[in-house]
Length: 529
Image 1 (cartoon, one colour):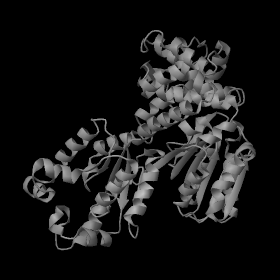
Image 2: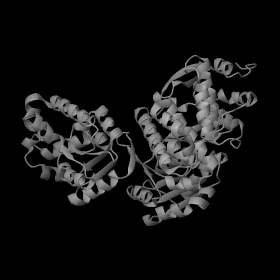
Image 3: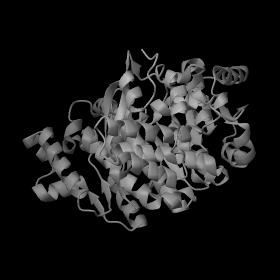
Image 4: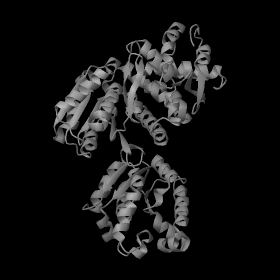
């Protein structure tokens, strides 16, 4: 259980719903406006008028940071403008379940009563002021785990929905009005039904593959059958070989033949290949349809389904054609992993290790403590690792959506990994296996460039081996893959932008000459320009 924060405009019901939620969860309730008035011995309205809005915001921020520093879980109702502070908003998103309550402007005006007690609404036309402020704050209020309308809803009904959400695992990818929630569930097809239903699709284009159809088709049917909308099914062949323009064209043709419109939704139900193809097709159909990702592999859950990277492969390399197209929702049902072959499950653990190595030393230490349990599918260990990896990825995407800075660090292991994968014809290695080999090679390169702490490569190799991943790649294989490194999309001229790790949780992006990289990897540079 974590704290629950109710945000939203004045008059949306936060102070009414909050105590009901607190009672249901057995947590204390606190209203920040009431607490500020108690401490300052002055009303919020008078504080605003006498000291100004900026002073009120500073008092709010200090109180919120204090509340989140004491380690006590509680239900908190925030003032309408508290989370206009971006850094504060993101701190709350990282540490609590943030729910935005909404209401129509006319309902808000009717509920707030005397505008003199609401300084933000003073003026000749309170309704116009509400409309204006709602528009100004739309991106702020959108950045939440869940948004609930309170118009025509009883406080008890709203409280019940908030309480149910508080008992779920949700991660918010905060991107202003394009914010979406990642739900991590256990054998809950209704979670996908709810995510799709909330989008009110006119029709659904379901993209999956024949293997997923055989193993998880029943769960898929249970999730989409209640929607009662026209369905288009596209069943691709499984495997990286299907990640091609031909597969994208198959999705395009099926959707157009079934007369999709701009209210249609594309559902990617499968692994990373399916998700990337579904996302790319959605980004281009009718100049952009909404897509929901329902990953069925560990790798897709912790990496491919979150962040909006879509695309397909060419013979010259992996993911050379693609787009950024964020999903409208992601539902990761851990039950799908029960039917995942062990090799594929283990391959996904490479991405968990990567994100820990780059961003979070505490997760890395947890992986070292629980490697065998993760490899053996221990449910609590696996669910916890998935949630933490997704939360880290969400924060990185929030801060660098289009890979202009920190997000490039998540390419650790992928420069050599993608090259090895392509050199093997996308059949010799699973993606995660190639990434594991890339991690070992690139961390070893970081050591030889005097960036990584001595012994880090051995430590990485040891953990990956305990997880069941391959860690040894021959010099001949590296040499065979090397020409593909020169075609990597991260290359700029004769250099490549390479994430280099100093120690777990500390990485930096360094421009490394290709000749230098080849040298420290022990690759024969003959003929390399």
